[in-house]
Amino acid sequence: MSTQVDIYDVTLRDGAQGPGVKFSADDQLRVVQELDALGVAFIEGGQPASNPKAADLFKRGNELARNAKMAAFGSTRHPKAAVEDDGNLKALLAAETEVVTIFGKTSPLHVKEILRVSLDENLTIVEESIQFLRSEGRRVFLDAEHFFDGFKEDSAYALSVLERAQAAGAEVLILCDTNGGCLPWEVGAITKTVKERLPQASIGIHAHNDSGCGVANTLAAVQEGATQVQGTINGYGERTGNANLCTIIPDLQLKMGRSVVNAEQLARLTPLSHMVAELANMTPYDAEPFVGRDAFTHKGGMHADAVKKLKRSYEHIDPVLVGNTTHVSVSEMAGRSSLLQKASEFDIELKRDTPDTRRILEKIKELENRGYEFEGADASLELLMRKAIGQYRAFFSTKGFRVSVEQPRNGQDPPLSEATLKLELANGMEMHTVAEGHGPVDALNNALRKALEPSYPELSDVHLEDYKVRILDGRAGTQAHTRVLIESSDGAESWNTVGVSENVINASYLALVDSIEYKLLRGRGHED
Image 1 (cartoon, rainbow, N blue to C red):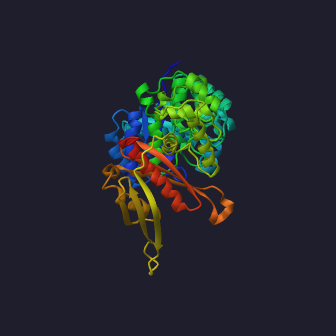
Image 2 (image 1 turned 90 degrees about the vertical axis):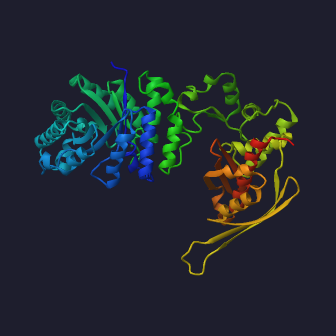
Image 3 (image 1 turned 180 degrees about the horizontal axis):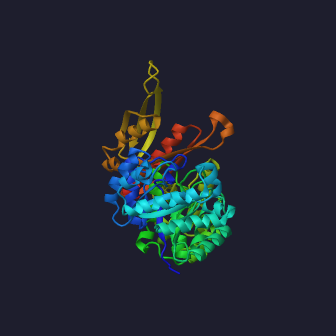
C-alpha cells in the first residue's frame, strides 16, 4: 500500500460556505499562496460559473500556485443539455485549470427525487461529462456525491457509478459523506469494499462533520486505501463544517506514517491555521488539536511540573513539529510549579518557597477573584510578576481621563468620541492631551499615544491586532463587570494584555496601559 496521501484543499469553496466565513478577493489569493507553501497537492477555487470573483481567482491563482494544482469545481452536465452546450462545463474549461472536479449522483434517492432522471440516464450523464472534459485535455476527478448513503441504499448502483466514471477516464474517485452522518467503521468498511471492487482505482475521501466524525471518517478511509484527502483549514464549511485538515495532516503524518508534506511545511501548520481564521473573520478555536493556542497548554501544577521534567509526559507530540509551542497557564488553580515555569519563560528567576513567589500567587488569586484572567494575557502577567519582585520601571502614571461621546444633531452621522487625558512622565513632566477617535476606546488610545510618543517614539510601531470584550456577570445587567483582552503588535512580536472593571472604558484603558508598559519595558529595561 502506498504511503503517499495527496491533500486536496476545499477551503475556498466548501469552507467559504461556512456561517460567518467571508473571504475577499485578495484574501483568497493569500490563502492560495499559503496553501501552496504548506505543500497541499490541489487547491479547489470553487465554481467558476458561480460569480466573477471565482473566475478571477482561477486566473490569478493559476499564476500564484507554484507547486499545488488549482482545481475548478462544478457539476456534471444538465440532464437537458448536450455536453458541448452545457454552461457549467464551458465555465469549467474557461477556468483553464489542469484539474477539473465534477460531482455526480450516486444515490438512487437523489437521482430520482432531486435530479429526476432514470438511474441509467444518470450513468450516461456522468460518463459523457467526464469523457467531454477528458477530450478537452483536463484531468478529471469525480466527487461521488452522497456515496456512503447511496451505498447503504443500493450498493450495486453506487458502485456502478464509480465503475462507469473510471471507464470514462476519471483519475480519482472521491467518496463523499455529503450529509456527514456516517460513522468511522461504516466509512472504513465501505471504502474497503470499493478498493476490492476497483483495485486499480485511486480513491479519495470527502467527509463532513455533522456527526462529529469528519476527521475520524477521513482517517478510516485512508486506512482502507484512500490516497486523496479533501478537507478545509480549521474545518470550516456549511452546517457543522468539513473534515479539518489541521487535524488530519498531522494525524496522517505523525500518527499513521503517511507521506503528506515535509517537516518544514508541517511546521507552518499553526501559523497557517491562525492566518486563515483571521482572513475568514473567524475567532480561532483555542482548544483545536495540534494548532490551537491551548493545544499544548498546561494549567494544573502537577502537569506543569511533569512537563518541565519530561515534555512527553503530558504532550502526545512535540508541538514544534506543527509550529506550536508549550504554554504554561498560571491561574488560581495553578501551584508553584506552574508559576516557576512561567517565570522561567519570562527570564524571571523565582524560587519555590520565597516571599516573592507567595506574593505573586496571592496577587494572581486576588485579581482572578475580581474577574482577571491571565491565561490569554502573558504580557499583563509578566508585568505583575516584575512589579511584585521590584523589576519594574514606571515610565508614566495616569492622573485621570475623561471620555465623551456626542451624537450629531442630524442623527445620521456617526457619534463623535473625544478623550481628555492627564499623565505624569517618569521625569516629572505632566502631559495633558485631547484626541478624537472612532469610538471611546480608540479616542483614549489616540490620547495615550499623543502624550507618550514624543518621549517614547518606538510606540509609533505599536498597533492593536485584536480587541475582545466579555461580560463576566451578565445577570448584573448594566452594572456587570467587564473583562477586556487586547492583542498588540509592533510588527516583530505580538503580546496580550487584560483589564477588568465595571466600566468597559476603564477596563479597556487598563489593558491599553499594560500593552504600552510592556512594550516600553521590553525595549528600555526593567530597572533605572
